[in-house]
Every structure is written in structure tokens, then in C-alpha cells.
Image (cartoon, rainbow, N blue to C red):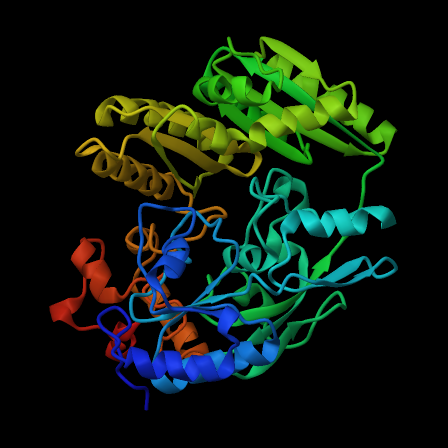
Length: 496
């Protein structure tokens, strides 16, 4: 029989009991309970949603992680696992009656195996540090989020992070071989394998992207790739954003799978160029960055094919990087888009939706209409090759009503993404930010399946409660689901 505790309502525990139990597990420097120490953990990169936890735990050993989870399970205390806090969907926002379990001190690269082309790392290792450690062996780790200098592998696993090269080389789920995980009860289990395939259900894919709701990762085995002999970037300018969107679809339709295919509109390049001096065309309505990698012969052939497609699509100017430094400069501008926009507006709201590539032009036109509707500016940067949108809605939180308009703007983008045949997220996750839009994307049977999976791993609902998967009651309140006379087929699932 499953207990009817409700993480979405109120957990109740004696804070003194909790902290005294945690103090028996952790050294003094690994347990934070004072408000000034808790404040840095009140939110992740989505600063609009904030909450102070009861305590922050910073374990240094797997044994301490196990003991913290067992203690919280015994006391019925929610646990929110946290990495570097660079997430953008509120997935690491604390629970007011819970603890934050930070894996920041799990920062060791345990092994780089050149022959097997893999790396074994702890979850607190920075994404970029893996490629730096593998570089002497001619290897690298492919997923490269814009925050790769700071984001950690544990967070990448939780959110199934991507990056500018995910079109050809895949998301985190395509580049992780094995995970070591601790359950809420403090039990260790290992999923996946260094072998090409493993028997049984694919729990590895289930765990990756589960947003810390099923278990806490303490070790990750990553697939490494040989560094390409050569890489070049084609930068194309367009006088119309819709035309640029069509060019993206044309490249894929031509059978070309670039290493990266990114798009930025004029508002984005205008913000980025003074900040990075990447050499972008500021007169263009939009630019595309299309990278080819491989042997020199493969790159030369693909560059010719890409430039032919871009010319036919109406590109007004085409440039090809002539050196590695120029290639890196082109990408530096794209990866600096978020901080660059932060320099020109008091606040911005970064959205994350995915649509079919052929609908890019349609979405860009709609976003332009929304700018006028909400009286807010929006800079657009896209992982265009796989249809992943990152509109940056600019607003001023100090002005009454602007945050509400920005939030409504974002909701309209997400719900249009679903209407166009896409998804409410591509790599940032759902967290707390998009939980209502899950009611738009999924119907009752799918949500019930999600809840049953959650219950199989965490029957008391203590891991990251209130995130990612909404209750059916919440969806009914949001007006996107019909629940007959307030009843559902599985009422015991309502506590999640």
C-alpha cells in the first residue's frame, strides 16, 4: 500500500530533528542551515522562481549521499539534487520543507580510457573539463551546452542536455554509457554498460532527462569521440528570417547532417557582436552557422554542398572560416548569446521549445507578432538543425506587469510549439517552469504512465516533488484536461 503523502501540498518535519540527524552524518563544513548560507541555493538559472530549503547538504563521499537520502526517507523530507545550478527551468529550485543535496564536491575525473574511448567521472565534473582531460588522447566529449564551462555532468544527465553540436553527435542520452545511482531509500544500482548494448529494459534512457525525480547519480561513464581532423564553419547572411528558416530545412532535406547548424536573428547578433566581436553581419535579418567536420576531403565536399544549398535559398552573403581561431570566434558569439543579451536588458526570460524544422519560418513570424502583442523585445537563437528554439524575451522585473507579460509571452511560444507538432522543451527540461504546459502536450493516459514510473522508483514522492510531471488535478485546474467528476482512473497517483 502506497502512503498518501502529498509533496504538492505540505510536508511536515521537525527542523531541529532533521538538522541534528544530518549533523551526525556530515562534517560541519558540509551542512548549511543559516539563511545567509542557504540564500545562494534558492534558485537555479531561472531566477524568477525562488525558495529557501531547510538545509543544504554538501556530501564528499558516496556513503554520505546514501546516509542523507536514507535519513530524509525515514523522516519524510523532500530532497532536491543540485549540480552547478545553471539549469534554466527551475528544476533545482528547493522545496521549502526539504533539503538541497549538492553534488558539487563530487568533482573528480576517475578515469579516461583511450582504448575504450570512455571517461568515468563524478557528477560534479564540469562538462568542458572532460574534453580538456581527453584532449591529450585525441578525444573529446561531444555534447557542448552553451554553459559547458560551468555546467556539470550530473545536471547534464538530469536534463538530457544538448548543445550546438547535438545535431550530428546527439544529446546526453546518446553519449552516456553507464550510471551509478542512489535511490531515495539509499540503495545503489547501476544501469547501462560499457558494452554497445545491455540486456533488460533501457533504464539508462529513462534515468537521463528524469530531472532528479528517480534517483541521485554518483558516477557517470561517458562515450568519447576522436577529435575531427578538420572543422570549418559556413556563416550565411539572410535578408529575411523566414528565408533563413527555410534554408535550414533545405540543408537537411539535401541529406546533409552538419556537425552544427545554428541560427541567430538581428536582435541576437546586435547584442552579441559588441560583446564578442565574432565578425557577424549586423545588416542581416538572420545568420546561419553551419559546421562541417571530418577529414579535409570530407569537409571540402560538404562545404561545397552546403554553400550551394544556401545560395539557392537566397543567402545574401556567405563566409567560410579560414582558420581554427576564426571558427572558434564564430562559435564564441553563438555561445555568448545569453550573457550578451543580459548586458542590454535588465532581465530576460530564456525559453526552450522544439518544433519541426519545416515550421521554423512560421514560428519566427509568430514570435514577431507576439513582440507587438506583449510590447516586449525578443532575441532569437536556435539550434536550428533540430528545431530547438531559444527565444530570449527581454523585460524589466522592476516595472509592474512586465514579468507577467514575459511569462505569458513564453507560455504562448511553448503552446504554439506543441500546436506546430513539436515539444515544450528540447534540452532545458520542464522543472517548475513548464509544468502547466505538460498538460497541453500530454493526455491523461500518458501522464498516468509517468506517475506510475515515478512511483516505481520513489513511492513516497520525496525526490524533487512538484516538478516535471503535473498531477492530473493540476491539469484539470489548468483547463487542459477533462477529469470526470473530479475522479481519475488511478487516484493514488494524485499525490505526485
